[in-house]
Image (tube, rainbow, N blue to C red; front, side):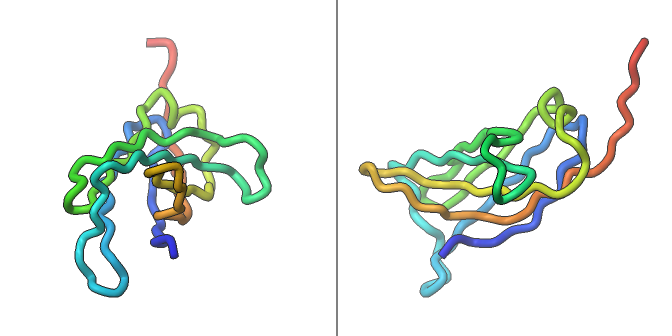
Length: 114
């Protein structure tokens, strides 16, 4: 079963969070050596298109650490509100959802004309 998280993203700012995955049974870090991870966020569970593709990097494979990020240019394109997201891992043609949850995009002030 995927780990559930609630995250917060400031609209118009860089977003960067490190997630550390652990095995539910042993409480030890999940080994992600050899895995590729991808992530998306959508406004609704029924949305056909993703609102954004999260940049996912396995930052410490042996200790189950994944870095999720989105730059300020892309967060500024999102409407404030809640978005569903998930992160999937791929190894040997086998895809698994490892993280899911909600990202709350908060309002930001965008200054133009300077």
